[in-house]
Image 1 (cartoon, rainbow, N blue to C red):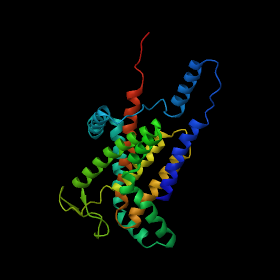
Image 2: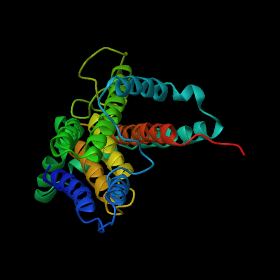
Image 3: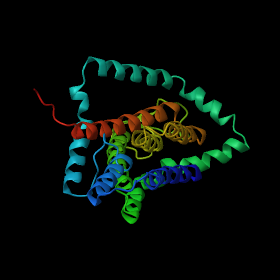
Length: 279
């Protein structure tokens, strides 16, 4: 949790410093000065590829449309999309055959150091992770920073969509958790046995939604993606370490959070592209 807080503060600080350190040269005209300031704000606060977001009716309607479109996207998949999905499904299927062995490795190779790290990263995929983006939106309002506001809103949209899909998957694929099962192949009928909620891992989905959103928001900060994905990976692995998820659970949860978030951002980018003109 401390790592996440430092990470968020670093991101917000870098955005703030980019505004404060932008040189505004003295202009002979008040209009020229205003134009220069507007250029700096446009260039530093809001990347051109992502439109600014405001919490209004349009944002809610767009969020619902994005969620429906992303959930229904398999209906529009082409051959290359199905090939990618088949590769992922095949990898997960193969990993399921190793789930029991991986569980044993994690449970029999614990030490004081790893046992101290796991509790520190686990909350990132829990309730704390769900509140990161709403907190950023409120912070953006407080400091009057439209970029931070937009990060909070876009991230909240991605988190809502990925979480809904994740929990729908849990209800449809009722898999028993490893701390209560002797085999990774214990399943129950859809919408039954509430404790059968292992697949996919919500912690992993939340952690990778956070990581992917920050990586998409700060593509020019080369350190953001490695740090964000490393923290997300540790969060996911902590669930296997704590015997709360099978390894295949966290892979699917991580993929879900990553690809849904990318889809949300890609849809936002497409909406912001200028219409093509023909000469």
